[in-house]
Amino acid sequence: MGARIIGTGSSVPKTCLTNADLEERVDTSHDWIVSRTGIHQRHVVTQDEDILDLMHEASLRALDASGIRAEQLQAIVVATVSGNYAFPSTACLLQARLGLDNIPAFDVNAACAGFVYGMSVAHSYIKSGDYDRLLLVGADTLSTMVNWEDRSTCVLFGDGAGAVVLDTQNARSDDRGLLSTVVESSGALWQLLHVRSDHRQTVDQEGSHPKEWGIQMKGPELFKVAVRALSEVTRKALDKAGLAPADVSLMVPHQANLRIIRAVAERLHMAMDQVYCNVQNYGNTSAASIPIALDEAVRAGRVRPNDILALCGCGGGLTWGTSIVRW
Image (tube, rainbow, N blue to C red; front, side):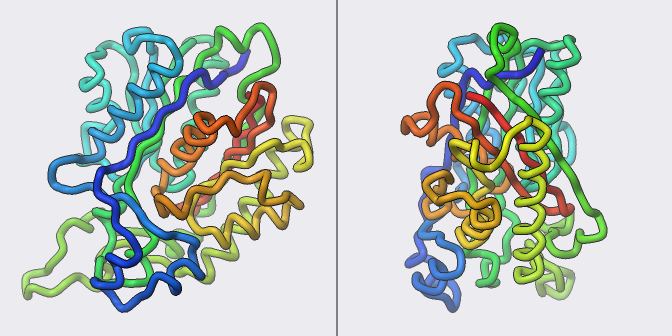
């Protein structure tokens, strides 16, 4: 018994911030950003929308694509690091927005690898036989966490939400569905990418920004770890499924940086036409990036029945992981 994705959906904020817009805010340029990241624009929340709005819209689209009703869901798992409250969980707020009650709803905090961690949790739930149908959402609004005066980080991040409906019913009749997931972490590397829990307190008593205000990142070191970790964990997940990189129809990686994506593909001996990229349009949307990219790929016809997909991500923690799916 396994889990199968039967519907995808995504949502991004209405406001689009281009590289030209950022040129007016910090000492940067379109060419500098593109050459180092591949990013051309990103979407950011404003005062009239928040993470819950994005999650709700993405969930409704995934439910519509799946052909099931919200009340048929048996659990909700949300991967996020940017909920509006320390508690209740963002998943509980989404549950209320969907009009549901008396089912488990909780958050998973694994930063940019959160969606893959969520896949691992959802797969275990379904494999246990206790749940048949779950909603998994990856959502983040990291624009609310960045220091908009720090050009090394503010150009990278955008906001969004992606959702999938997982069901076991169809997975019983064939081998399509989630084949394997491998997730790992190294807490010793936490300082490479982190943000303080009080990041919204933007000034101290003297009216100055705290020393570590906003997302803190050691880019060169993180690049090396991410490339190595993603390529290794993807091989492990493929081995677990009895597959090789050559069997992958489409890799859907976390959309952090085009240079990282290319380096991982090169290590796995994959051509870039085996890789789905939309980082140029959205930037790094953290836990939302994989489900947003997956939803786009599905709706664009890039995913066909029996295709082998590799969903992989690496983020703060450090955390990383890969899920292998037969569509």
